[in-house]
Image 1 (tube, one colour):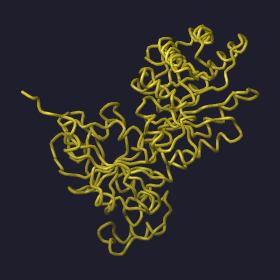
Image 2 (tube, one colour; image 1 turned 45 degrees about the horizontal axis):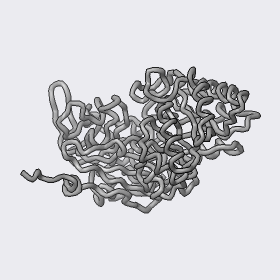
Image 3 (cartoon, one colour; image 1 turned 90 degrees about the vertical axis):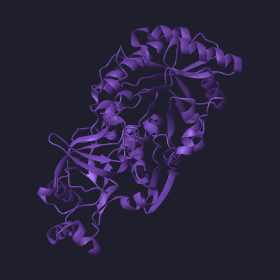
Image 4 (cartoon, one colour; image 1 turned 30 degrees about the vertical axis):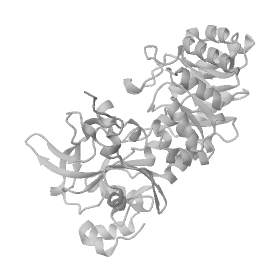
Length: 460
């Protein structure tokens, strides 16, 4: 534990708190912060050093000073550690980890994972282009998504990707036709919709019969048999993805059992499948959720693969990226009312839409520790400047803050910047990647000229 800097002693905490911070472990610091009113458990690689929240060894105040706010900040160490948790759990098993690019598509982030040998799960031609620019190998790319255009299919076939996850007979016919025109064979897996409730938010559930994704399991066998007769299709896999932020193992196992039954039926019919893709969707702890670890999930999954000559493909996204990043924002105004108090910050729903879109809860903490004076703690809704009542980052948060203070929205490395927009003509935030003591700007802040460069006045 780093001792507090003497120069910061008075501004951050009293002498009693100072001695406690010097002596206590990180777990104890979490207890102290709970007394302080912020009530949270520190994310690994985002910890307080000398009273300031840091990304690895870099104070977030330094990042805010250099790159401004709002901004997204990622930890290389956290990305690597989260990826290696899957890699370690899959040791000894024929497998491929394909990071779900939709969770965080910054090419700096993708490059960190590509260096580790990651494959990638993409859902658009644009994401495929990002993977290539980041140093990813097309031969380790799985192309998911139910609306692939002819142009995207040609691009992927030209690059010789690993596999298409096909979601409808119409898509299968289109891929076969285009592959024939290009005189190539398209590697294909069918995505099965198992009609399994993953117990997650309806907006991120993908494995129920009334969801738009995949092929109904009852129809899968016949579609596989039809596909096996297509001249330019090579059936190599069975795929399933049942949702996001899943908090239990049982739905994964149920979907795997269904897929293995399909594999066995196909084998008996002479159609040999080489891989089983269980998708992604493992959740992360945003607050008090109880979440299985990758090791717990994969230990249970691999028991289903004993004595089977199948490659296991997994597509984690959130569980690698979410807790590897934070969203940094500054308090512009404090607004006190009869019913509600508001901390108006410079970050908004256009930057981080999860709270407005899903009602998602993410921890919000002060970047600088302050003296634990209960009378200073006030309950705020943390809101942005956008003209929508849904523009909030968090509601009913007990915070000791002043105008000008920095706040960190935790667990913002997944479905943060990738879902941002320019609503209210707000330039999008920069993205910063920290590697120990080094800081890399991996996406510049947009400006107004950038936003308007594709627009023109009409000639009249």
